[in-house]
Image (cartoon, rainbow, N blue to C red; front, top):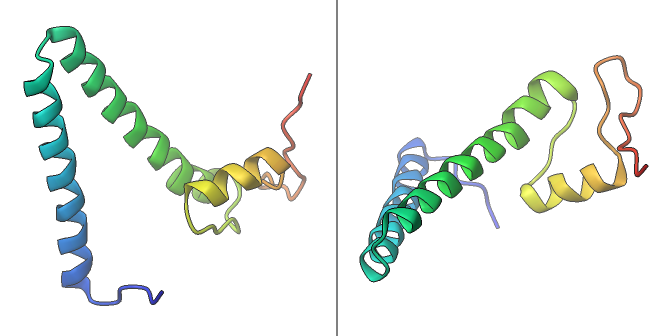
Length: 97
């Protein structure tokens, strides 16, 4: 699959994702309206956005500037295998103890 190079198409794609999130959230809230469901949905969306920011920006900028990956699955695979490197160049393997 070819990467999108057209700036306008990239924005259209982003707003389509936003539209999907909003529609799915509205339908979910309408089907099971309660403040608890609404609150949990808001917390879930916010938390996932923060995780996504962490995976794609924080890791690349502050942990391993050479780290490039294609998506969250690739990020999780590399994290589980301990392939992230600290800025000093040493491997930052996750301890299983």
